[in-house]
Length: 70
Image 1 (cartoon, rainbow, N blue to C red):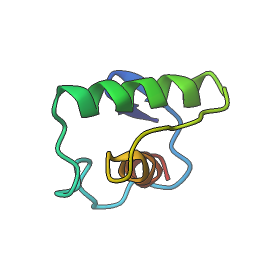
Image 2 (image 1 turned 60 degrees about the vertical axis):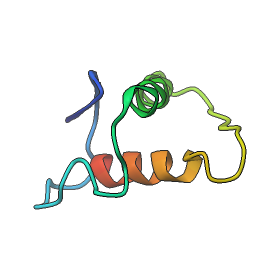
Image 3 (image 1 turned 180 degrees about the horizontal axis):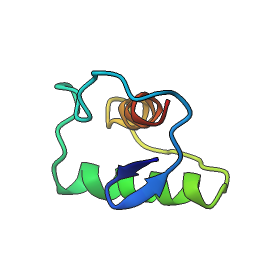
């Protein structure tokens, strides 16, 4: 398992020597809040629709979540 902003999620791949906070994702308050919300939705197995303007970080959140959960 892996904790994502306080939410425990299953990890499907063995833990590798990768940083949990990639340099391109800065965990400021808004990023942490959005990552926590995404993790809660994944944990509850609900569908998720990410909306926002171009370049606001939707893809970065999903890629970060995928990297740390495998």
